[in-house]
Structures are given as structure tokens and as C-alpha cells.
Amino acid sequence: MGSEKESLIDWSRDQAMEAVPEKNREVGQSLVAGGGLLLSYPVVWKPWFARAARRLGLPEERARTRKVQLDSMGAAVWAMVDGQRSVSAIVKSFAKEFSLHPAEAELAVTRFLLDLGKRGLIGVREGKTRKR
Image (cartoon, rainbow, N blue to C red):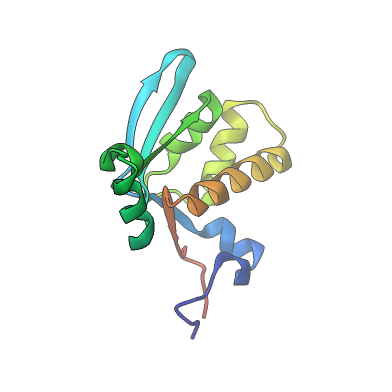
């Protein structure tokens, strides 16, 4: 059985492709011109950093929220993250929608999803084929 600290790095390629990404419920979104999307998400600060921000007079809500703007391709992937589709299904849909070679789509989508995960915008749960 895997440990609680198990990461995607420990998964095989097949296991990672069958994983299902899910959006963080605390992420806000708004449309921007050109088909893009602006995501805002909370940032958890260490207590000492929060005290320093208060002393500097930074508004707490503004200081604890980050934003990232997605272009139309990023927005398309974000829309496909529905908690039901696997990474593999997202890659296939993305390749078809943007007329990309499957390998190119896989590289772009997986890198993008990893970045979203590092920022805390998505989480990933194991797919159906995950074996322990």
C-alpha cells in the first residue's frame, strides 16, 4: 500500500494518464477578452509572514489572493477538468480541439496540469487502473 506522501512522480505513465484532476473549490474564475480566463485563488501564509503583511498595511484579502490569467488553450483545459475525465481523456479532447499531434497535446496538457497542481488550483485522484 502506498504512503500518504506518495506523489505523481511515483506513478507510472499509464497510472498518471488515468488519474482524474479535480478543481479546487476555492478557485474563482472570470472571463477575459479573447477567450481567456482569470483565475483567483487563496494563498496560505505562514503566521510570521501574515503578521509582517499586517504591519506593512497590506490589505489581507488582496495580499492573500493570487491571480493567474489563462489564454484560450489554458481555459479550454481548465473547462475540461470536471472531476470525471482522466488526464488521458483531456489530452485526447485537447488534441482534437486544437488539431495537435497526440504527443504534443500530451506534453502541453500534462505540464499545464502539473503547474496548476503546484499552485494548488487542482488536485489529482487516482484513476480506475491504479493498483497498489
